[in-house]
Length: 128
Image 1 (cartoon, rainbow, N blue to C red):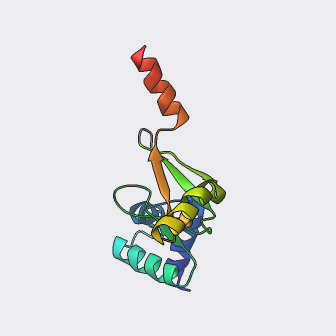
Image 2: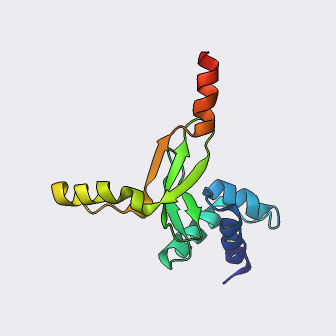
Image 3: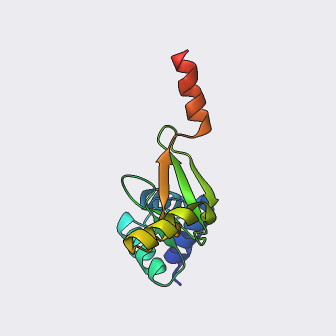
């Protein structure tokens, strides 16, 4: 593994869920010559060999993680917070899609969008 690839993998691990741009910014702190093209190529290679996995957490670039996605992502529209909930919360939906549509849902690749408790509380205060 090249030093640049080690830096990319370390950045993904440290950042948790991060876009290629966020990973690039992190890597460039210690290796300014590494560019975004190198980041994309490295992430693609690492995903093909199973070191990282991507998820689409909304519009825009995917988010990469070094950990297995044994959870569903909850993404707040207001503050952008990403939280994780257990996969089994999706069991009923996955079963229903399989039986009614013949569709096998990859629940590890799912992001649900909405409003977190803090943003909902803030919105309720504004309405008062």
